[in-house]
Image 1 (cartoon, helix red, strand yellow):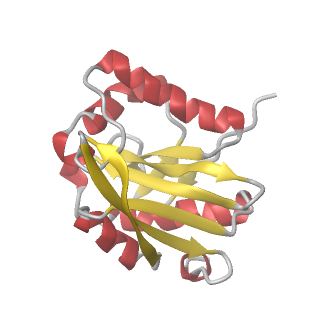
Image 2: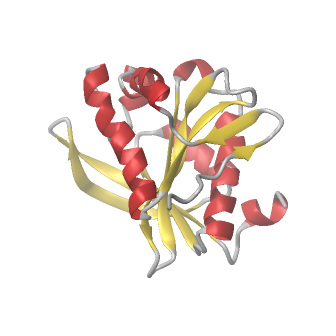
Length: 186
């Protein structure tokens, strides 16, 4: 029996499971130069983007995370995606990630959606730690992490190769035990 995928709704947002008809929107985001500049995944064709849809479904199927389509409350406008992956039940942690189509940057969507996803992780997945790995050059994302009370833990210098060059990643985390997101939104 397939477990039911959670839906999270606020006055402004709907966080829901991905559907087949989201493929074009996911491609629009993950092929956009401004989105993929600091994002680890990108696609050149609609056909190739099907890999990402399989990734979303496999997270749920394999119990290794959960990603949500972020939409307007009436489900008519697709804004982007966010979720948890690399979930470790043993260590009670997961990695958070997110992206928005640039038309919706600066509207507070991520600031509203990420606490909902963190709460879901802490309350339903029994996580203690949610971590984020942010490219050191990604100033916008680092600002978002600070606004959401994720704590900067340090930098892994030249730890990955992207486009033939070494990049460094800043590590951020938030914890259930000291989670201001979870406590302030209940």
